Image (cartoon, rainbow, N blue to C red):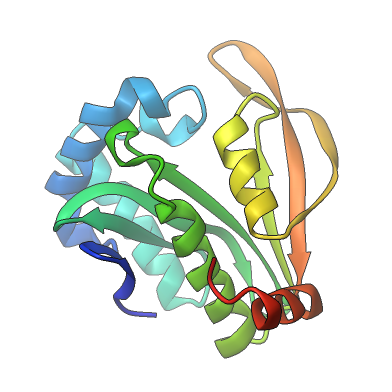
Length: 188
């Protein structure tokens, strides 16, 4: 998957180690907004740590594992998408997303996630796409619903962040559901 249009002036594109300074600047600028939902924001504290973070994904992608992409609006990095888990042999993956406050409300994450699901199901033949989200993250839950995902349950006390245990809702769409939905609602 290379650069994919998300509409006028918006695109989903690779996010690579050579873009570490830009990724750090974005993370630093949006940290207060992102930190309640994304534990990795505490680890991206300068350009060097941003480069290590992006390099892990570059190495993983080279081994056909998890990968990371940026969401750009008018050329500016405003968010990202991730295959946090990607297991082609088992036919499943997990998507994640983040977006700066000023870029919200434009459908960017829904369209980016749709493009990634299309690729995972269509090009790679995956059978299952998951979306894990905090029960308190209404906008992310709304994306899962718009994508036609099913809420399969809540994982209780699944991780610790800032001294507190957090739950995660598990949403998923299966390959046959996605193909059926895509045929009746192409790229909403």
